[in-house]
Image (cartoon, rainbow, N blue to C red):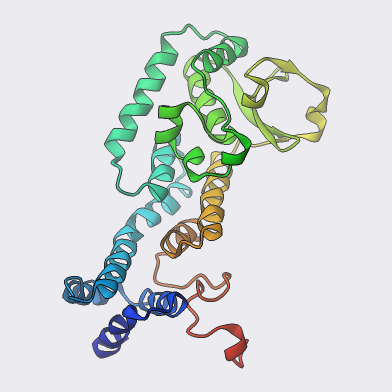
Length: 280
């Protein structure tokens, strides 16, 4: 895209119609980052408050592309690092936090768990219950904080898939052989004997025959793709263009230079709604 064309589009970001502005952003995000960033710098101190606000938002998206790429790369690594994935999943949403802060919180959790003499799955469940790790109220179950390790460790409330991931980390570090299973839509930690603990059962041990209706989630990549998808759904539900775009690219493994074709207008980068486009 030519420099003049980019500048023309940037000048259109002050359109009071949000849909039009989002469409312009989508087209600008097709540009090469090296072409776009210098021109963003020219517009970020504009006297037009609306234009300046949207340029700053666009700049944040561009600056986050590398982090989204990093999350996609984590999912493809031969040696999967759950610590790193929990941190990068959190940063998909809370992008102003630091990896160092989150790593320290995780190390503290692991240190506390190591001091609790966990020798079996019952001990593990007792540790999680004693430390008040629980599901959030039903009306808050889909909040993005429930999938982000920082708030989960601070508030001891989170989505069951994240709580079970924490329990697995503590249990495996204690030398236990454990896996994750999903039964009747709920995630649980399970041992080789089929004994399970889950946050929706207050981490109490449960030997159940209904496991026949469950499925194992022992691939950490699937776990984190699921969690990232929940963040994406929340972004879509709240109509948050920035997070729709950046988390969408992280899930797709895109470098951010292409549009999310599977999304409806205006998030797919189309310049016009389907009704105005004869090719749709």
